[in-house]
Image (cartoon, rainbow, N blue to C red; front, side, top):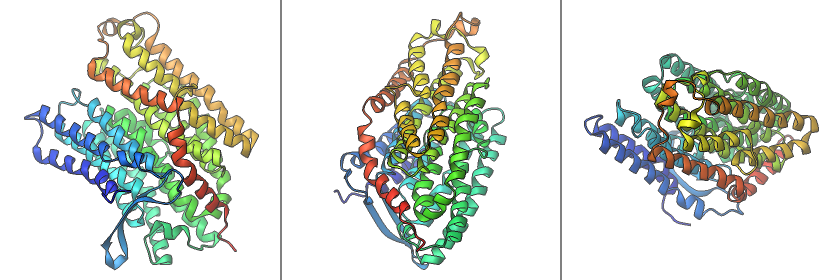
Length: 493
């Protein structure tokens, strides 16, 4: 394995390009700014390629590890590494960043350099979250991701952007304060910020429950789980297209990742004790929020609520404590990154032309935008969980795991296939089919070359993962099994 610091490069290369863009200044030469932004995104993706090609698939150990002294007084280290549970999220972040830069290419005309810089810096920070093996380093990256997204929503968002940005910031920050208390407690208990040391820490059930609740306060908001999900639709509706794509595709995964890196391995007995609560909240998200999505008049709100339902599948998979459910949850997270990102890109294409997200303002789009209609159909099907698309694989795995766990839980979880088809395809039918709704729709132009190839690339990812999910399942299998064995071994003797 190469001694090159791949994870550091994945974090700091996009951040360096983002800082360079801020220094370059804004709108005197937007073409140069966009070129530099794309170069930064592609460089950030290029340095992550060895994570896929050189990854030891049979090993559950941390790989590509980097460790340097950071804050000696606190025994904190700049400690990075990935295993099968985190490596795909680094790759996902790098891939989505390229799409976001391309999506804003001709659309963003105001403060272009700051817009692109915010996404590149956010990309590096999110990679930092997924690769940090030091608790303090994790917390710094985890909280720092709030700042670029807050700016993206607040500056380039819709009419109510300030309200949505504040709600996003306050919800996620307040939950994180309890997590900081838990991190400090674990440091006092172990004398170290090493996350892997915390996994082996002997804790009483009472300590574990309190730590589990403290971590859940941050991670449940970030996922977001019902009932702390209400910030997400507001944030999505007001965010620019790129903001919605990153929020859905990557930022929601930070909370779910927190469960597998912190809650489950540090507090395994509490995880078993409180699994019923998490499963209940997950099923409410899957069933109730799916029904809420069905009645939305705004396309972005509909996809935002569908994200809550799909992420409910993820938390359900984690807390059934079987291999199928755990791997299904990881696959579902990666798939949701591609599918929800693609859905928001499609809605962005429509919004750029009509400046409306209301379903009622559309109708008959297939008559004027046939290429777009074909691609949007694929992503709507994937959002419904159609076999052959990535949306099916994770949900199928989790439902199989649920059957092993409890038939009635599986039955409730499987209902998402019905609600998913209902809200996705009903929206598609009203927007795309029928007679041309009005003169504004009649004048809409089909996707240009940039939009077409961007959506085709996303379609290939969705279909590729749906038809051949083996690269994802192979890389996650050993780490998922090791985590389940750790959680099964009680710390209470």
